[in-house]
Amino acid sequence: MRKLFQIIFYIQLILISILVIVLTIRGFVYAARSTNHFRPEKWYPPLLGSAASAGIVSYLWEWISFHDPSKAIKTALWVGPFLTCAVGILHILIGCPISLAISTIAIISSVIQSLYTCWVNPRFDYATKILTVYTSFPPDKTATFVILSIITCLVYSSFLVTGIGGATATGTGLDILFIIVILLTYTWTMQVIKNMLYVTISRVRYMNFACGADMNTWIAFRDTVQHLVGRVCIGSAVVPVIGTIRGSARVMKSVVGGTDEFLFSCADCYSRVASTLITYGNRWGFVHVGVYNKGFMQASADTWGAFKTAELIPLIDSDLTGAFCFFSGVAVGSICTLVGGTWALAIHKSYATEVSIYAFFIGYFICRVALASQQACVSAYYVAYAENPQSLQFDATIPVRIQELLQRYNV
Image (tube, rainbow, N blue to C red):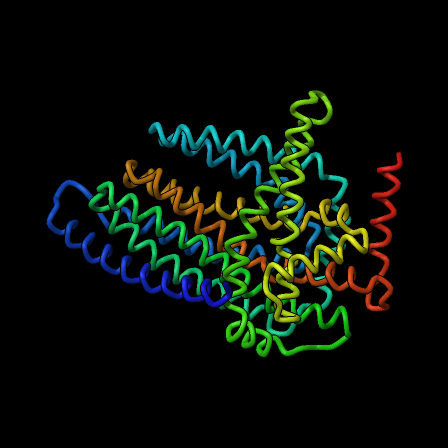
């Protein structure tokens, strides 16, 4: 499976590159011949401008979260819903049927985000302490890796944008299929880039937490590239799907509660399936992938088993690091949508909807890549603690939080 996924990943990169080049050339040829259809000078600048905004804002946001985790968490979870709502208002101004549907989704999402933020507000202090684990002693050359990752994502995103523009120029049914394929492969590739950084940084931090040893980050990255690409590709395809299933199961179980016996039994069954799946596919497994060179499913099972043994599952479920990264991605994606969508709305209204959609994808994923190092450090901390809670390398942050959760549940 490792070799198979690695081969598939490299083949799709080659095929998508060829497809993008062909679509780009065909699009420009078609635009040159057509006088009243696709206008590259009004389609590309807003989208490329929003991509540049994604890189700049993502790096600035990573810098802010590094220097002031408390302010970053509060800003992401409180300001993010307003930015999402602003996206909804933008699409109302655009006015086409698709934009109105997107505006409805965006406004409802902003309300849900706001309610979630109110619900998790008591966890902000603990989330700040955990993120400080990253800021107190970051791995060597972390900033360099983050910058290189952002630049790589920007170049790759801009390259794919040219192909999407070429497909938009002709706009046939087959071109729509091409755009969908490009977006799907883009999603997987960005996940792989993020998790390559995740595996590298988590390995370095795990060695420090577990053994007190300092490991060269470049060596860890070299080993990841040479030996672990296949495992990272598997995890990058599996984790988002399983994470979505488990998140929806937790929400369903919380909403249903015990009000209806049939609905409760359905939610409980779904929750059990999700709990089984998370055992064999979770982001904490990437830590063991990097440290012990394990297969991804085995690494996921081992780390989840360690969490169960150390009774950390409630703590893991209440951790806000993942929510912080997600909300940050949505916020940066919304900013890019506002930049690209407003620009397109001003110069060519018919392009505004699609430009804003693509801009959101780019902003979201580049921000997630920029924050991967922070999430990796927190994951390494949890895994190292679960394997040896008595180690002198750890302070009282986790034990104190566990006691707080136990007291809350007992009450």
